[in-house]
Length: 250
Length: 229
Ligand SMILES: Nc1ncnc2c1ncn2[C@@H]1O[C@H](COP(=O)(O)OP(=O)(O)O)[C@@H](O)[C@H]1O
Ligand SMILES: [Mg+2]
Image 1 (cartoon, each protein chain N blue to C red):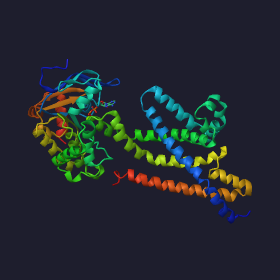
Image 2: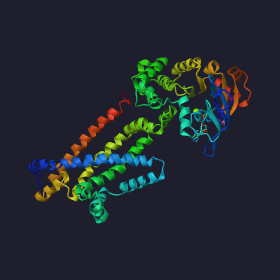
Image 3: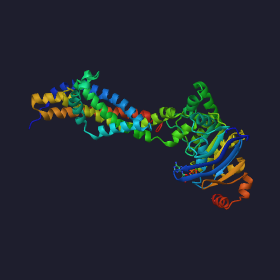
Image 4: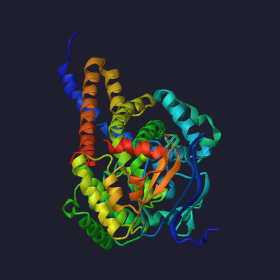
């Protein structure tokens, strides 16, 4: 059942998700190949967060299948753990651990989940802090950093777990405008290195330059799916057109 | 009426000789109460009704009745039962000190578990989701994320409860214990000078409260170092 002939790293097949009576996702079908970069956009409340949160089981889907690198997400704790080891996530509100220094934020899960010895965990943490260009902040607490710096730490924290896939849920939406670019730059670098990414964002410049595919969601459904060129220049559905005209006139 | 200062000078050292009992009641019940509070908290958030229900009943009973009544029930009531007199706990429950510690522990445990629960509920859900996304187990999240963050959130309310506990130790004097209040009552019975003696006693308790407040203030500052570094 979990053996698919497809070379997809992520497969969502007819996924439904309900919150009580309310259907947040309807028959979602999505395939992401290794190394692909997907941008997801759509109006607020359209189910973007819910969709990517199902991929690492922060939300539990009610119907359909989700298969990550050949492993199907079921109720089994073992399967969930295995998937979470492969999938990193970056949140809109950073969600750093406020009571730990930056470097400890990056070391905790390495030590607890991957059982990396402390010296090695520290080395890995410093390596990725350098990669997001803030090694000098290692011993500070999250509140002492700007939003842009905190989000870069959050990305580094996800990278420390050596994930196959990183999910981004509006990573720049909570940032002051002058900090958006420093985060997008880090994400663009990651994309160049071949990381598989699903990114919920309304940064259309980023979508154009980085995405292999853009997905438009509305009312819990995937309405349109196309490469960026086509998506922006030649959107098919009326809903996509309406959405694009709204955000592009900002 | 006259106010006899020399009586104050004489009675304060005598009352202070009971401070050992006051401290023993306070620290022993405080420690046991905290352990009980953590157990009650874990029972309440276990998500299993057969654990959470008894914990809620305990909390409801001990928060819903006066501590003085609880002390009386334990001191006068428990020895009525033969199985308690036959149990290994009898050497403890036979003594007023053991009864006082038991009552204070059960009482403060109920209050503190609610305080801790407030702290646990105050932990930002996003932080725990980040922990899940990194692959931490429920237990690891509780130990490394929830506990330290909730402890800081709960500390101000906890320090208030600890002060209440310190003051509640004076009720032990009603079951013959000679803590500071017990000694004060003895002195009053001998001197017929309730005014001087009880005011002196109040001042001692106020100083203790001040010391406890300062101590918790320090701990709070330490635990909040990451909020205002
Ligand atoms: N935990 C939840 N309980 C109930 N409804 C929810 C919950 N999370 C999301 N929803 C609802 O599901 C819909 C999709 O939400 P979401 O995926 O967050 O949208 P988006 O990320 O596209 O803004 C919204 O209508 C939202 O109100
Ligand atoms: Mg969202």
